[in-house]
Length: 105
Image (tube, rainbow, N blue to C red):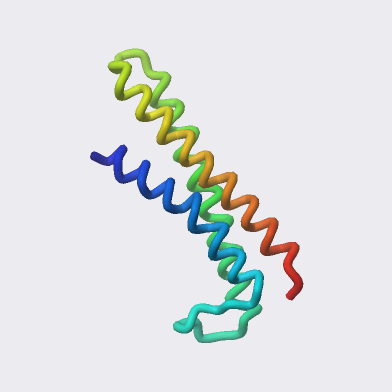
């Protein structure tokens, strides 16, 4: 069950991060944010960095767990797929951060 939640969460983040980054790079600010747009971009960049590291750690961790010898093949395949998706989250976070940095302030 946890693998399914991780799989769905990673797939959503891979799609959602570039879409929202494009909006933030265009000047969009969340309505609840109390501060300047520059502060929001700085906080959003910090959030993308956090998603990069979480994706990297969870992706490599799932690949490491998939390599353990005493597991059935189905569990090993699921962990490898979840690991690949979390590495996709890390890549998506890094590319989104680069797009945000390249956007004019």
